[in-house]
Length: 367
Ligand code: SMG
Ligand code: MG
Image 1 (cartoon, helix red, strand yellow):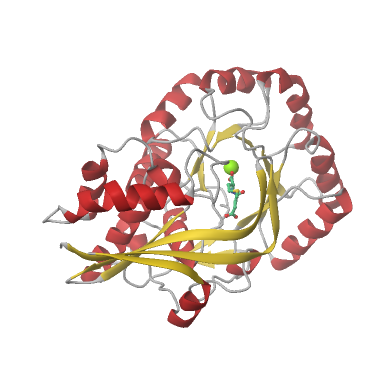
Image 2 (cartoon, helix red, strand yellow):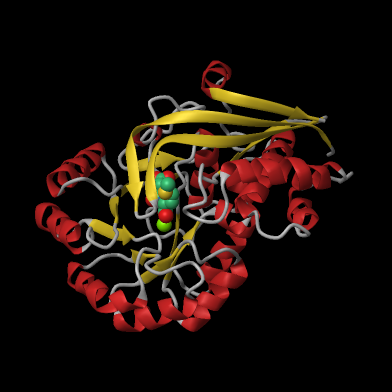
C-alpha cells in the first residue's frame, strides 16, 4: 500500500449541552478528520485534540500543522505502507501523539478495508457489545446534576462518572449516592485539579465507595500520585499521565495508580493502546476506555478497542445522542446500556456524505 492522497477535514459539531470540566467548558466540538486514499482503499481517522491546549499540550490547529508539515510527508515516503510502519516512521517527531494516532487510524482503516477485516477483530476483541458509562460535567447546582444523572440512568447508562474540581467534589458525590444508592457504579474525574496538599480532603471521598478517582494531580506528578494513593482507599486511575506503555509501567511500578484509562489518542495510536491493554491485562490491572467527545469515526474505534478482554470496567463510550444532535456517521445507539461493536471491514462505519458536508468548516487536500 502507498499513500496517494490525504484530506484534512475540519468539522464543527455543536454539543447537545455545554460540557464543563475542571479545565474549561466546551459547547462545540471542533474536530480534525484525516482521510487517506490509497490504490486499494480509503480510510478515516479522527484527531481527539481539543480546540485549546487545556486537557493536554495538544490542540487541533497544532495537530493539523504537524500533520501537514512533518507527519504526512514522512508517511507519504513509505513504499510499503502498513499500519505497524506508521509509528516508527513518525518517531522522529517528539510528542504530538493525538496527531500521530489520527493518521495511524486512517491507515489502519484503509489497510483493514482492503483486506475485509474489522478493526475489532484485528485488535483482538472478544465481545460484540460493550457496556456504556457516561461522563457528567460540572453543573451549576446539585438539583441540576441530579436531574442530569437521573436522565442518563433512565436512558440505561451502567456507570456514572462525575467531573470534579475543588468546590465541586464531596457534595455532588454525596448527593448522587444519597439519591441513587450505594449500588450505582460511580467514579470521579478531576482532570489534574488538585495538589498533594488536598490529600486529606480527597480522603473524604473514601466513604462513598467509588470505583476510582481519575487523575487528581498534574500529568507529570507520578510520585505525587503514589503518595496520594498511599493515603486513599479509593483506587487512583490515571488518564493524562499515561502517555505510553512505558509511562504506564512506571506508574504501576511506583504505585501511582491501580487502574488505567486507555485513550488511543493520548498514547499515539490504537496499536500502542492495544499494547497498553496487554501490559495491564498481564498484570491484572483493570482498564477502561476513555473518551474525548469523539464523532462516530473515533467512537467506532473506541468501541472496538473496548471489546478487548482486559476492559473490565464500563468506558466513557456513550451513545452519539449524549453528545450531538447530528453525528458524522450513523449514530451509535444505547441498547440495554451497551453499544454494539461495528463488525464491518476497518472501522465498520463511514461518514454520511451529506452530513459531513453540512458540518465541514474547512478541507485541505494534499497529494
Ligand atoms: O467522550 O464522553 C466523552 C468525554 C469523557 O470526560 C471525558 N473526557 O478527562 O476523561 C477525560 C475527559 C477529557 C475530555 S473533556 C473535553
Ligand atoms: Mg479523564
